[in-house]
Image (tube, rainbow, N blue to C red; front, side, top):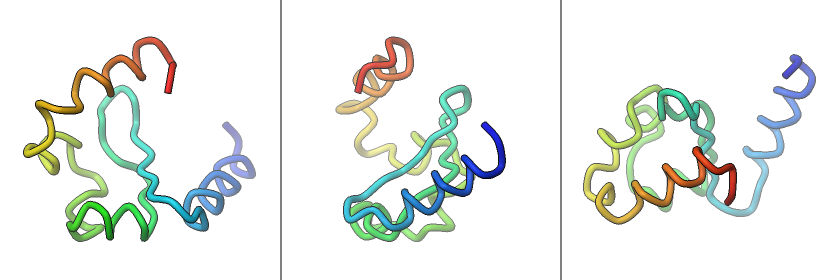
Length: 77
């Protein structure tokens, strides 16, 4: 992805009317989170960004880990 595409993605996510968290699929570390996601998560942005997703959201790991793994493995939302 080139710089222009990265900037477009960032602006799209940050201005979306729904909560979005963009993860690195290899490391499961959030790279972008918008204000709506932060509000839904109930955690500070600084706690979410740059941290292993399941460390930050350990309380929901049992419910969503299989679904997220499937999305990453199969590419299906």
